[in-house]
Length: 222
Length: 222
DNA sequence: TAGATTGTTAATCGATTAACAATC
DNA sequence: TAGATTGTTAATCGATTAACAATC
Image 1 (tube, each protein chain N blue to C red):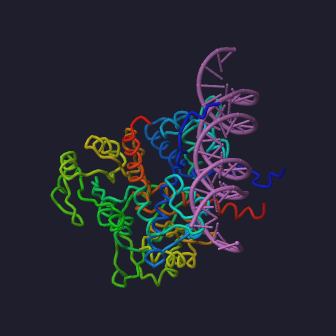
Image 2 (image 1 turned 135 degrees about the vertical axis):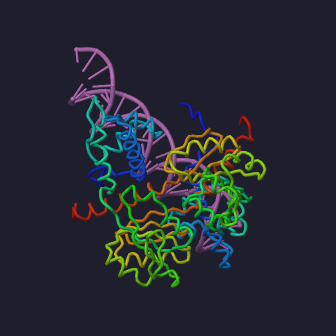
Image 3 (image 1 turned 45 degrees about the vertical axis):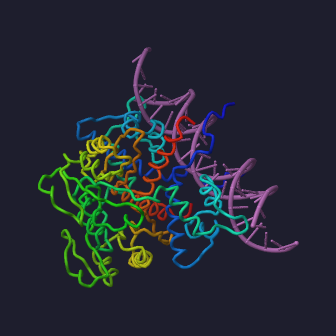
């Protein structure tokens, strides 16, 4: 009786991750000197259907040429624009423990438009030190440094107990988004999106899959 | 015309991750001395509906008491059993770079039934060293050490180019499951499940959410 | 008992896949 | 032109939510 809702289709939550993978694949093809591709080729490389690829891109515009496919040199910047990685994001990291240190040392982010330019820790002994070329500040300076260095995103790599508190500090400091590695759900205003990765949960997912598969095998035929 | 398929309902892919979160919440409640909970309380803490909680548990059995709820001391071991974390998993890690080192130092896994007891690297200079108490072996010894130490799961933390090759080595060595941190899709036999986490993809997901939200805000009303 | 809460079926919602006219 | 491939609508599939009898 009442369609009531969105003028354009709602975008499924999984689309952004698939766009990242399409982008990786396109960059790889470009390096190989390929200039044109199709939804079929892209889908095959990614393990999704050609229809999925076309639908995903279709949420954002018409980028292809019927009969021809997609021109890689055109499609790459379109996807970067959609993902928001056509700019450099300045990122502050909170919690210079083992995981935080690893993230500071990890080179993978900078290839994709992210630069961690400041780190913070509650341990006063770390303030003033450098990790992998990034200055570590006292957490009490978070708001000041966020403003002075124009930081936009925050990474939380503190213990679970401190996660919500740090999240609140980041929001207060004007962070536009939060990447949470602490094994605890954080609650933020809807104006500040967050993505959480809990490594133990992922490992338990693997354990579940292995155990379930073993159970099925044991059962034999059915 | 033909139901054709599963005798019991297929289990949605997201269930295992939610079970992990239920478990965390139950452990927290137990520490606080709470003995009984309900699907409503659990759902509220996790940000899901009570129906979701009951449905998720319902895939695996009847654990609650109508009118009363769930007895925490009983439910915790049931979920551990379902997830397969009622045992100790021995894990081998391949790729002792910055991320691999961080994972070796990370204490979070051991609380949940996982122990990384051996590490491997292709760099011969690392063989024989220790990182966070774990011996690093040459990757050429992978199969031998997997067998001698009874390793069951493998973590891949090598560069993208080497991911598939390492995955194949792990399968050959008898790994029952693979946790892949390399930013590359790996293909394994269906008898060896895998879980992949690509940190750059997750960060791009955040960038996408922030950019989309900013775009919506700018549009104003509509 | 009355109130609460489960387990489970049916209804709804959302995401993926199939199909095909339009187009190069 | 004939063959290929897009963009998009309709059909299918899968997951979540609502509803409620059964139960404590």
